[in-house]
Length: 205
Image 1 (cartoon, helix red, strand yellow):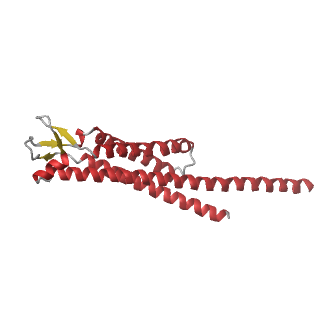
Image 2 (tube, rainbow, N blue to C red; image 1 turned 90 degrees about the vertical axis):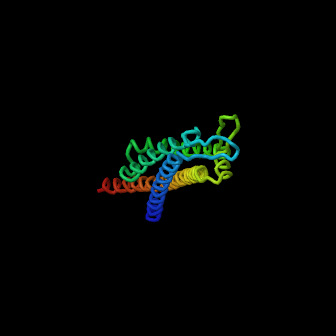
Image 3 (cartoon, one colour; image 1 turned 45 degrees about the vertical axis):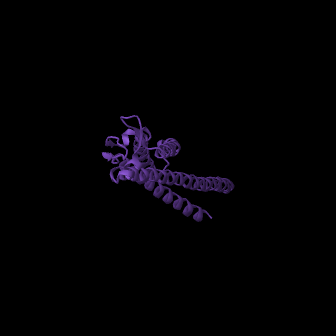
């Protein structure tokens, strides 16, 4: 039974590390893709002047880049603590629960804000009319805005995937930790019992 529990714990640790690495990579990809969704000119069909649109024109997208970058950095710290410190260091025991809460919170909040902004990507033109970034370029046959919108959508979905991967990794880590914790408790109890028996035998002699 102990061998099976140890195997399950190692399997859970491996899956958790893989999930964290995937989450970190997806978060970096989302941040880079969003940050490069810029310098795209939108040509509106109803007389508005062409305008260069960047991700920085939308605060939720700026937050996405910042949150994804910070989350990726925190995940790198978590991976270091799990792989090199084995999660048993005092620092690891303090930081891992904090990282397990902070990283998903950053990713999910940024994803939610970005999804809300994606539904209405527009700006106010000089003549006072709202110009849709995606519809404006599509109406004029341009490709700038469509590329911008595509990158934004892909970036948001990548960040959502990163949030899910990190959440799964955290759940698996918790399950693996509980299994290993139960194993260590049983080992300690059995060793204490055997120690008492040995002490009694030595006392008799």
